[in-house]
Length: 127
Image (tube, rainbow, N blue to C red):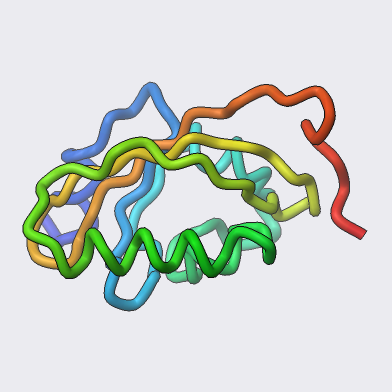
């Protein structure tokens, strides 16, 4: 028996940090283990599923990230070009990543993250 979560999980690339998100709500639906590692999700936190993606974006980048997500949500484009953004991990680390996306169906997108090393800001703890 397949439920929607299993179907979405099978759509994902499993060797890279990626997730499936409903861009209309920001809700994360499914993630890979690599994505959970990138966001430093511990077993006690319950994971990223059901959480708001924008909440993991650095406060200084949230407006521009939300604008980009809205653009792709409203456009008919099937693919999201690479966008650089800072994320906040569950342990308070700031990490720079490039985000690319692929529209799956309607408002559901698969987003893939690629960490960008930046020695000036890499793994700085948010105060």
